[in-house]
Length: 486
Ligand code: NAD
Image (cartoon, rainbow, N blue to C red):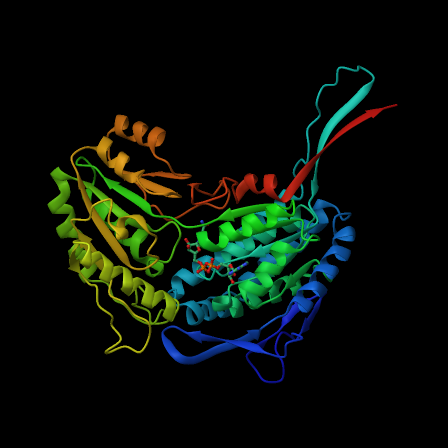
């Protein structure tokens, strides 16, 4: 059982057992749509709890790595089935815990199952190459081997998909994992771990330790028995973790923020571009790392595009994500809600023109609701054109050419995702060549990734390593070069 007698108290999962923290303290998780409603309580864990998890993981990994890839894969397949069977409950919990609409939460949970199946199949794929030796009597080959114990530190915005796209490859390649999810979405994470428990991972291979980033996240980053740390979250935290892990010679992977441009060229299908701005910019209340944030529009189509965008924004229904017709839920936390409002104020102070939204909807709705918001006349030096807002705010910027648009698009520290809408093949090719982004999208929104393809950013958005698809093997394994002579 994952809960104590008092329902809604979610425990740690260490060495195959659900257990209370040594602190005897819990952290509450609330519903951003109804802030007084408690979704559950998670353990406020201590370094002692983490130490137990690390010892368990290290011991379990020595046996786990000896199982065949096919055997490990079968457990991942089972976990996928269990996740699917529990998807209604997990998705509802996600909506209640961090505000994402229920259809999006269902989609994310289905994605989680697909990720598990993709990596289950990896257990049957090749793990090395034969390399010709200069010695004709020798056999030389490379062999991928697991790292050991992997610390998994995740944000609240994709509480099912991100932990799984890190844990599934880590596990299939023979590592043991310790998940430290964001406290804001840790009840959802506990429900995912429950599926993994029932799938039959041997005790200690999968562990969950919830609690403060500064204690448990920091503890994972510092610990010499945690060979690698995979992190998704903000730049501030990520850079600190990277430095901490590097200082002790560990391996790390950081996926961080974005300030993603959507370029709209004069010749494009304007309705498709408007839909992409709405979907890529405002779904999940703008709280995706791949969200369109800067909409860079060529002057010939600018006014038409703007009008159509405002028309569509005016039809958006904001509300509790469990209500069927809500397009956008609340901000995930009070902190997010305050922060986005701060950016809206800064935008106005710096001279951007607020042409749609900008207000809180809390007068008539209880939760952390904000209107979808649009700024016009935004210039590149403005704070709202440079910093990640992580909320339902779009900024419009006017350019005379696609060349200028690409230059503007690159004029930020981030480089996660970028998109262009155009029918001109020369413009498409220049964009693919010149844009500084890890995810390059043509006639498609900036958000939206496929699990079988590499995922990650350039510049300050990432540590340049890639997640998902086959790319995950690079991070979660290391190579032995074997030379055999009879
Ligand atoms: P965050 O950095 O505040 O927290 C992320 C995780 O780090 C949480 O589990 C947190 O508890 C932990 N943490 C906090 N302080 C720590 C410390 N000192 N040491 C170790 N761990 C610590 O991020 P967030 O607010 O949860 O998520 C939003 C951010 O995540 C945004 O910047 C967004 O762009 C980014 N994000 C990036 C991607 C991507 O793939 N590039 C995907 C989703 C979200």
